[in-house]
Structures are given as C-alpha cells and as structure tokens.
Length: 80
Image: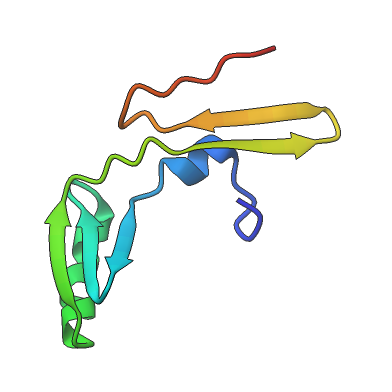
C-alpha cells in the first residue's frame, strides 16, 4: 500500500504469491501464473492453485480509516 500508493482494497486484490519452504504457490486465474516460467528458470518449484487468504487491512489517514477486505472469501468492510 505504501510503496505503490494503493488503497487497502487495491493491495488486497493483487494476485497472491506465496513461497513456503522453496515452492512458489501462484494464484490460479491471475497474472501471477505468468511468473511460473521465470521462477522455474531461477530454479524454484511452482504450483498454480487457488489462494484465498481472507486478508483484511486498515489504513489510518488524516480523514479517518480506510478498510479493505478480500473478496476471494466472505470478507466485507463495514463502517462510516
């Protein structure tokens, strides 16, 4: 969110990539799948699969709070 000046929702909606002990899990149905050949060329194992984290985030601004929830699961943002 900070480095790319993104809202919480925009950051959460980015394709997910996870490396657990050497294997890169790349989120199916997203542009993350395109990274498989590059990562494999670097010697990593890859696995393309559903990655539905359900992550939530809150950004504190001068005007108040901005929330974001992962639409891959049942998350919603509630507030005023």
